[in-house]
Length: 263
Ligand code: KIV
Image 1 (tube, rainbow, N blue to C red):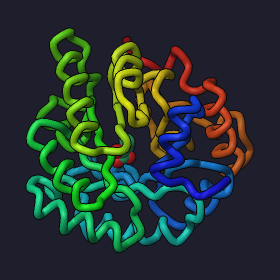
Image 2 (spheres, protein in one colour; image 1 turned 135 degrees about the horizontal axis):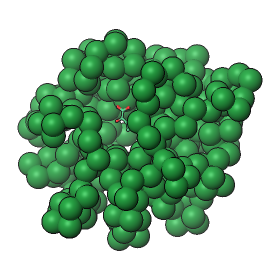
Image 3 (cartoon, rainbow, N blue to C red; image 1 turned 60 degrees about the horizontal axis):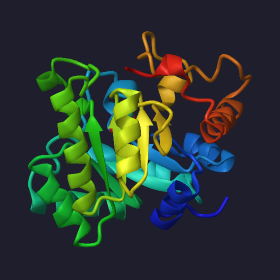
């Protein structure tokens, strides 16, 4: 594998090679993921739930994200390192710029922020100042309280049209990647066709340009995982084989199957 960059992710979209991404929070797991060809490691604020044991991601601070980004970066040579901007860290442009700079200093090569609407000008502000940005639409866990829980999004026609408009706005603002979480597979397919930038799905069906799962979910450590999760430890003897199998199944289109998607 060669070093993954924003250019190679674009080339993968263009050639139809699926992008394999996993969340990661520390160096040892990062080293193994990097070694088996995971293309992007995301230091997700899901760490608030799977590492800190809380019931949402809003407890995660910039200090936590900087610490875990530094840990993961120490284990990565070739994967692209994507750092999550936690709740409250990007809600105006200058706040976002300062916090993105902190994540980049800790090793993030791209930063991810949830939402559209007023966040579009933040994406534009960051990307026009040299920050590589990923959007995140659909189920945005930081706003789960407002959404009424962790629920599938954009099932109704008007909401689906709005999500498509938001996705285009995120791209037009300069984002170089877009995460689509828990939306109908047909809508994710449409977004993936309409956008020039790669889309990465989690509960968004097989037509996305790549897939991401939360590390603890795919290792079978979560008691009641969402429908879109597959436990890669069921068919594999060790963690390295589970990661390798995940990469193989994403690249071959075997994962996600129809049973992992929403209509
Ligand atoms: O924080 C996270 O792990 C994420 C993924 C669910 C995409 O944002």
